Image (tube, rainbow, N blue to C red; front, side, top):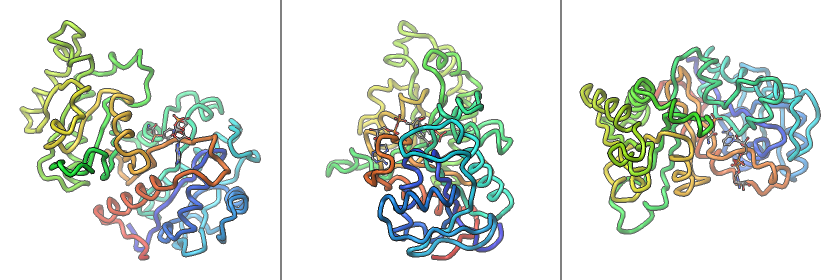
Length: 349
Ligand SMILES: NC(=O)C1=CN([C@@H]2O[C@H](COP(=O)(O)OP(=O)(O)OC[C@H]3O[C@@H](n4cnc5c(N)ncnc54)[C@H](O)[C@@H]3O)[C@@H](O)[C@H]2O)C=CC1
Ligand SMILES: NCC(=O)COP(=O)(O)O
């Protein structure tokens, strides 16, 4: 990694809130070591629409110039068609993916310290000619040529931790065995191999990226009451328990499978560093209840640092200046910390 590389912020779906939450952070000085990737004209228009006093200026991809108070530096990618806030247009799907590719290339070539992604709209990318697209996480796995990645969402401001009686960590971290899958397909995707690979990656990155020396992972069951000894589903007996036994034999501290409805209560979370949920809404509904807007999404297992917001494109808010940019700020702060930990030199503030 060369010296003084910026953090990159991909601005996401152009009709969503990604461009404006990026501009909002730039306007209050939170993008000072960063560069946005997106259409410069779009960002200028959105800044004007919101009445933000900000110079939006273009720089060549790979340059060391970064944003400063009152000035947002942009690595330009051209929109395919003009954008109306809140109105999706599948013609711009290729544009969104181009912003991601620019970021990946720059991280891999040492021109950037990390990438932070504003939300994109999965459906419109699929409709725009990319039928196998399911999300940043899986796209980044393929773009980086790795076999497996882990989606982890984390907040250090979990709701239950605000109680004066709470004695555990204020961090809540939730990782997923399966990510963007129809519920009908989830049970078949929860395999011995998948659980063991994801758990190993999670434990390794909790150590290496979060500095947790001996990570304790609580693992959810798939079925109600963790299958009730096989009476309410057999995945626990046939797949999850054997996988966890193998992981324990390797020295991993994995508890479970635990009934997911009570695992997230403060008593069970007190000694836990991360929860491994079997599917998207099992884990993320709780995480978002505990800290929506205060959390970030991290992809573990990549050769680069990638964090993201905890929310989506919020189309109905786009162009109105009322979206909360806080999660993007949390994602930026985390990316900065993770990049520094990897030894990626950041532009000094
Ligand atoms: N990292 C990413 O790229 C993500 C993308 N998405 C995508 O976003 C699209 C919309 O997804 P939804 O499930 O509707 O979730 P969403 O997060 O866009 O919206 C859910 C609710 O939260 C509100 N909300 C979201 N972000 C907000 C913010 N910053 N400030 C204030 N209120 C906010 C919305 O107005 C809405 O009421 C989908 O295509 C989904 O796949 C969803 C999550 C993450
Ligand atoms: N709910 C998290 C989410 O959908 C984000 O997915 P990704 O685009 O970061 O893979």
